[in-house]
Image: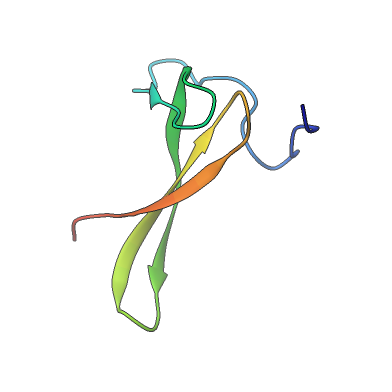
Amino acid sequence: MRAKIPWLPSTLPYGAAAERCPRCARLALIPWTLRRDQERKQLLRTWVCTECQVTEERPEPE
């Protein structure tokens, strides 16, 4: 397993609504950061798995 990245969460925050991670299948995928894509003018949320540190971006409603 790879080392954990220090700026990503390594534990589930209290009360976080976690989803199942597509990579490790644990209930550890949480919403993390929010950004706006400058090319598409779309709001994107980065989700991170606290167990395997995989990240994915999903569109966020305005």
